[in-house]
Length: 394
Ligand code: GDP
Ligand code: MG
Image (tube, rainbow, N blue to C red; front, side, top):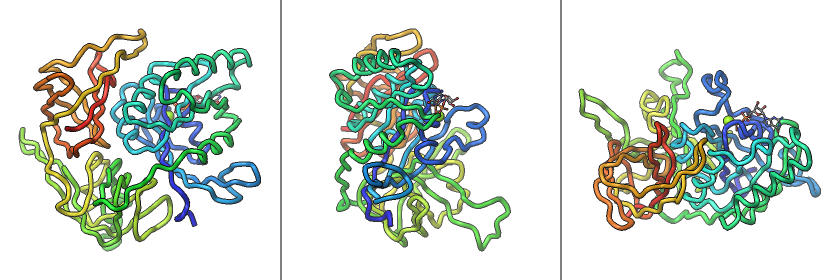
């Protein structure tokens, strides 16, 4: 039934503890912190996923009954500053974002950093929520609202809705659903050769499964363009990493699509839209524990070769924020180490050349770079990678 509904990928971003995971569990009925380490530490480490269908019942929006309006797939991004790379690779797969700001704490370093990340990824559809209004007075809420409006003035989010909510008490959640239904669905390109970004990879078999009942290795991610169907031969690049002494090599994998899953539905063919799982004929050993995260997939022979050298056009922000406040961003220099993100891939490298606004980076982990791809650039400040700008693959 959901097949014909418009589909939207939405990232939930914002500072740690401002209520992203709580909001997602209100919106989706699913608690996204499901990894044992996350439950123990009470923070989101990996990207979490959950899907809903939004219905309109009279004038009210909800997730259970009425006329189905659209299908939304959420990504819960980690807010911790150490997890910038994970947040960025999540941001590469979304069409829109909900920026959660704890009204009791206001704008914090990762509110700013995540907001910059959205700008650098050119995500224009942003819904701002002012969370935890149950904890503050009306005056305080108004003051916080004014600060948010100041913060977004002159940016892509200048006219974004700001919705006061209590994620914990379930207040105004329907207003968020309503705003999600107003967002224009981006035009999807189904004519080009397929391009699938791997955001997760896993082995879905329970320990001790019988050999003949084993499921193939699974890739989770987003089809950016084109289509894929059951039976297609696909190529995964850079592929699997093997180490022999000091020699690290990446080898592409060629496999076949066994089954396709969208939400909890099995489908024959996939189009660009929400996150998808692809069951392949690969030995699940090859896909377990996110070993192929960051790879890209297409039909055989379509993707360019992996590269260790990346030439990009750079745009740096003017400031970076941490607990101590704003710090000016100095220009990039040769021999400097940077972390980069392209699509769902993260790599680190040394800058070999800087000329005007072009930089050449020598990477330690190869990437598949397509001309025009967006690149997030992060610099290390006191042992934390901070996003300082973005670029475009030349
Ligand atoms: P995240 O780090 O942004 O994912 O934040 P969490 O969703 O894990 O929430 C952090 C803490 O804030 C938890 O203890 C939540 O119960 C609490 N919290 C989240 N939303 C609200 C809210 O609307 N009101 C109140 N009072 N507490 C909230
Ligand atoms: Mg969380």
